[in-house]
Image (cartoon, rainbow, N blue to C red; front, side, top):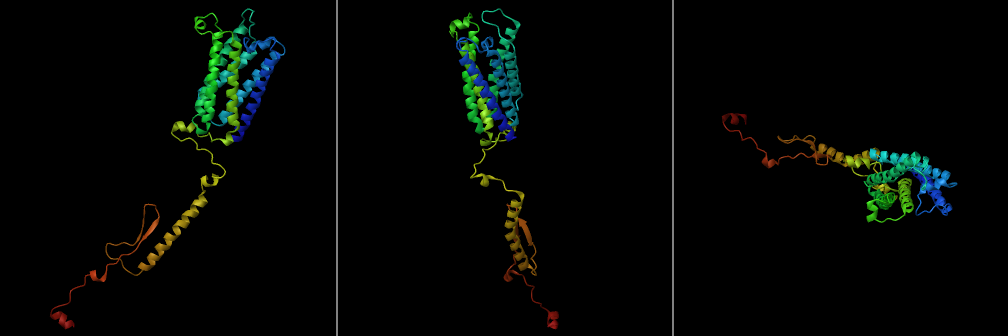
Length: 320
């Protein structure tokens, strides 16, 4: 599964970089017509070749996000159903946002513009939730703690920019009177979308470099009582940390048992022909380690052996 995850991570990086380059080109090429501070990104659709490039950039961004999701699934990082649902909601909302043309600033409202606005709101709200859930999942592995921290830092900036963008949509509300945000909805939207792109690229880069990181197959088992996977040993300690096979274990057991068998055989030969006294048993018993240990025969000294009393009486004298 690791080669597949690495390939998906690299594919996601290529798609995400291509999407970012398209948006950067539109920002520079159409700067005289579209103010990047006051005008939203969707207004590129009203200028040539903004519509085609905007749809292409959105499609590449969705494809890169789906490649990231597939890479996480191959590494068993999507065990939470909410993570997959939020990623799919974000991708669907972005496709709808690109497919439906927005309303011009000076034009009347239309159904296409309303659908575009609702889809854009879903894009800016579903992705932070999906990325935060992904950060919580990968944070269960110690080797991915740095990745989770970077994701959360980027999400903090993205959520702040999304909040400012939301306030800019209601310039006459009472909240904007207390919080003067100004006419910076274009800049706020670009920062929010840029953080989404940065989060996806961070996850994709980590998936592409998964061979250098801790195995993540055991992340899902930490919630079920198991322990997280330990870091991969380096080349110098790989041989010492590798588990021996059955043949090696069997050979080591035979070498340990050979001296014990020889001692037991010698003890049996020394005790052959000598009857054991009552209460004494010859044989083997097992110690605490489970290895056979011989028990030598213990004989009573001659001084302790009880002899019968001498024969006395006329019968004994006749026998003599």
